[in-house]
Image 1: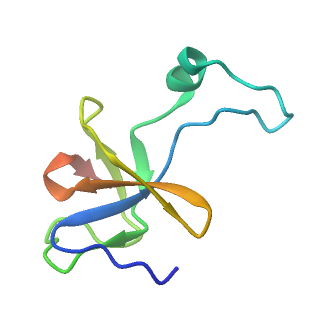
Image 2: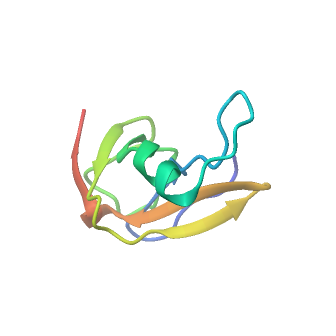
Length: 87
């Protein structure tokens, strides 16, 4: 992926699934319940000092994220301040 976030933005995979691997379509409530807030960092902006690409981070579940479609795939963009911790 060639996308590079600006500033202190962090690019994460979109954890929400609307369909199971076997093809069952999930309603919004079930999809939300199956999502996670522990994600792998895919890219970081030049001003990020806490997280780096490849880190596993916990995102504040109350946070709003920007949904970005890049190369026909949905991702989340959050600011570094929305990260609660990393492994």
